[in-house]
Image (cartoon, rainbow, N blue to C red; front, side, top):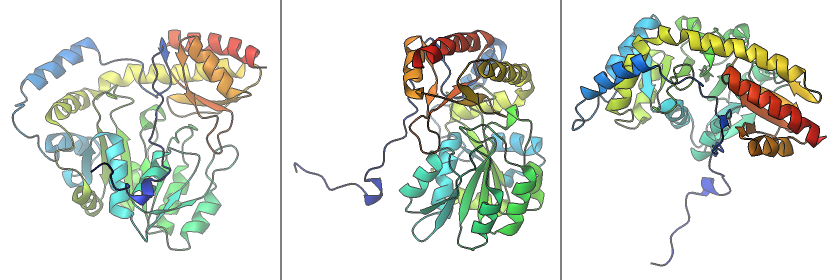
Length: 356
């Protein structure tokens, strides 16, 4: 045949997710940890990998890793699920709780993948936009879930790309007000030191998403995990791909998680640099920087697209959100090393002047 049938109708007009990961001297666009895994721990990882039988399928559910995570969080194995990065688990959320005739509540501006997953699974999306300062419109959310038709929602805390935590008291009120499944995406919680995990004891409709990609410097290994009730986790297991987390990634994650305390100095360095970066941004005329509890800072500047291009030409890559709805003229910069942050601030000062 010289032709092929059209793809599924929900793909029409859908743009693939593009992180715009371009080569640059200073990579500050993807919210990665600027510090790689230290050499001593890397050697321990390699010893663990050498014990992996590559001719055998991995443990389908990564049970050894589940046990480590469960013990650290005061949970049972059945309350933990490991996935191929947080992205797989986000898609599984839409598969398990979405679909035709189901409704997802979105809180834009937030991570665009949530709404994309809803669309891919034929789920209706209802938006409750955030306030101009990017805080959640709590009364509007509670009023909307009170209508009773919402099947699931994601509260991102800290929110990506805007950076602020959701209020824990609001999350508790939300969980008590609805039987919708509420995922709290805590991909960046190590940089905020705040979590809603204690609410799991009271609310079966809560599931918490976390990742190894950020604080634990494993963006290249693709590992995320869920914390939730056993009944909720069982539904996620029904839709997950078999063997989605390979044996090598499991070995890496086990080693890193056992040694997670070793990452604390780097995490604290990012928190300290975040404060310095916010201060530096506040000193540049024409820049409005938004407070952040994560490892990135969103800021608004006139002619943001031209500023982004100017930064890129100087070897500094940040994320351009300037054409995204509700994020007009906004750029997002990852907190890097002191040297990377200095390079960014120096380049931005010059770019801001040129854009005026």
